[in-house]
Length: 563
Image: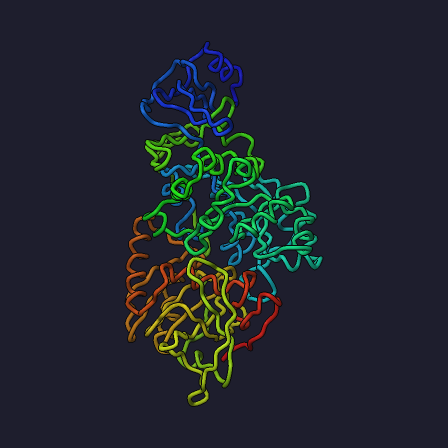
């Protein structure tokens, strides 16, 4: 828009565009019309649609042009690669805007991580906007690497890449009027505030929405989503690698409700992006499930733009940012060409900026004895549900052997342990989990939401000790161990969360890790992210942190620290 008179002249037909997309048909996501004719682009902005336009021609004959896709809530850290590498991966699939909450790395490094995220966002081939992380830590029930208060968040609020306050995970604090929560909400009262309130309903939902929270991605049923819509929220339909809510929410995807829905991935790893796709996968899946293509593409673009106040995008129309996807088939959402801000992807390779968070894994000396669980009688057990981050609160009788309640593979009862890794307390907590199907060995990770301590699950204490020790040696990541041998690993030295390697190499390592995990008997499709989410104490019903077992419904500890 720096040369507005020239833009207007091109729109009027009196000057040449920088590039003319010719031969395609535009899907208008407001009217549903299919509009033939040229699309003229000037300086990254659309000048003309549906009329002959002069300028260098890019032939898109036979293709349908749709607005670029907007991921309204995600943690780039969960892609396990740096922001520039993430953009290289998802941009050619049609994602041209990503709204990033960097609270994973912020929980490790604090304000330094938010400043790094804002800098990295401006160096990406797609448009990345940052929501400032509201809950570092997510609650008082864990030990994170940092704390970020309202004053620190407010100091970054005017950054041109900052959109508002990210998902407010401490919903009990909001509903209960916690002073720290009130300070953060007050500081962003005139800006967008994103929500996170799984299963919240009734009067407590009234209180949460009254706090000024306008979007939410935790609805896992149509009934839950409808109540949140009725109370003024816009629903961000999520399809991540663990949390898969799209099918459950397809009944909402009607033309009437579509202006109040958007898509997000939240946490989606390179395996799923490589094998299935990103937002393009959600669009294909929705249409295959009976959703009108107009609705699917509107939800993927204009509805998300308007939910977050991005008035310059979401529709192929004059004056809008030239975020355009050329697909061969609306139903298949098969991107043949993508433009982000008028630049066709993939463009020139962008140099990633400096990384942060090296040597962030600091754990105490690990021994097999620390995984013993002294006691007898009934114990709480975390029950995993495939495709959900909601867990069951189970109770099992587990007899003690030599004073130790041991894992029992025959009953699918594995030991799970969280070890504080930020160099603060050095503490740990042991518990039980059901749902992995693990028969032997151990798997470990430093991707452990949201505090990102070291978490390990296993059937053998020696293998658990080796897996945890190995992650300390490689500065964090994933590891699979069996019989005293490291079968597969992926180093994530950037804060214990991300790799500096190319997306393709990270994906290959994940494939090897998945194969190795299945060799232990693991039945979960995505065991590593599933493992990460059983340590998040703001998602019902039972979780574990370095401080012990957490009854999320009561928002209090029920276990005891250590064995």
